Length: 229
Image (cartoon, rainbow, N blue to C red; front, side):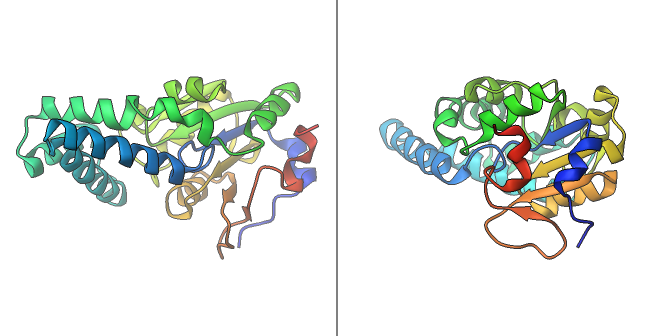
């Protein structure tokens, strides 16, 4: 277990960095809605290509993250194209539509309770709000009605989490040191490890304890009380 983050530690925090998917919004209802839409599309068009691409893309993305492949975007599209016997251009079009654009309409309704209030409170307190996501995040923030001072996606540095390059880039942009940074995520194996490598303070949103990391269940946890009034 890392050192416990307490209310008194907020005094030294300059940058609060957030992951997005599963951290700011619940992925389960989003996946159910997207699964429904994808199935309806597939049956109406009698075309299974979108389902095949989305499935292969996600599986390969997980592996490339573990292997910390440099320039992963190019490799990911090429490998997915090969696996689905499609052109890279067709794969990119399906990914852009089904993974990046179509989910946007549902995000606001999947937002975790307390997130808008926390963002507003951090802004009032003069804290820098950063986003460090494996996926493009700017349009997602807009769709959720949120704003951040600095946004870094994995594609900006060419490496997926748990590599800490994106988090370091975010700290550089915010002129924050590791002791001045708190990173909030939901995956210990990705967000947690990236935070450890960067030497920042870490909180993991989880309904269950995770041995090596400090967790919280909701954004109404007393840890966030100073910003929720």
